[in-house]
Length: 260
Ligand SMILES: Nc1ncnc2c1ncn2[C@@H]1O[C@H](COP(=O)(O)OP(=O)(O)OP(=O)(O)O)[C@@H](O)[C@H]1O
Image 1 (cartoon, rainbow, N blue to C red):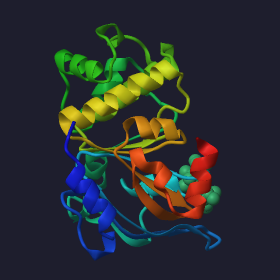
Image 2 (image 1 turned 90 degrees about the vertical axis):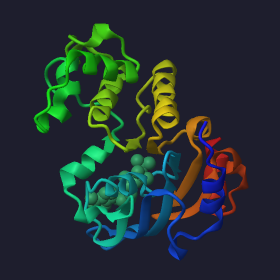
Image 3 (image 1 turned 180 degrees about the horizontal axis):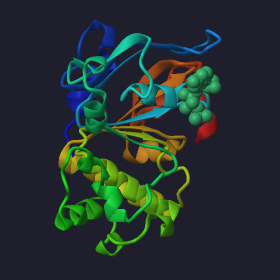
Image 4 (image 1 turned 90 degrees about the horizontal axis):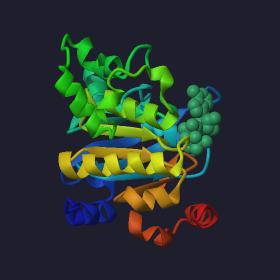
């Protein structure tokens, strides 16, 4: 397991606005989003996410978790505030290149027509690269799918299998960061565990930075290193995933009490 103790201490002790955290992969500064009716969906969110960490995002329904996640690969453009990837403002990066580096997985998998191999090959093909059979098999294995899936049609897969193909398709772009929006909420416990195992492996073996929204406190405790608690569009606390009971914000305490 990677040693995050220094990064954790730093994250817990330094206010992001006071400067860049050590080895941050993602820095979010004063990220704000208003709704059409001028309601604050996100309100000056500041957070530094260290490289190679699984960072969980939890909070009540409607608190802005998905909106936060979607800002990180420009599924919406921040009207106010900034997001930096390795110190570079993401608004200054080519958006397709950004989305290769910062891959995203949603609650429900949406596969393209065709075989599993077609799906896995899709991202690289946009850059003119055709993955070899061996490369596809490696990606299948990485997503915990055996070689029998290669020729299967996306339409004949279970939701759990399709979610793993989605993960393999995202990994084919060789992302450095994975954004996951409740990726296991539609899955049974076994499929959930398969995905969790893959995520932990990606972190430990590839140093991938993973940011995951989840409604499951238990899941966050199982796999996350740090957790950001979003309440009414604000990150009110950042905690060690093993110390959620130490939350001090009253809404955070209430949310955690009712969720456990
Ligand atoms: N494009 C939009 N226009 C207006 N309001 C929006 C838009 N997108 C989201 N919202 C509102 O912003 C708030 C936050 O939504 P978001 O989906 O980010 O919350 P969430 O924490 O992910 O919720 P959940 O846990 O239920 O998925 C909600 O009140 C939602 O209705």
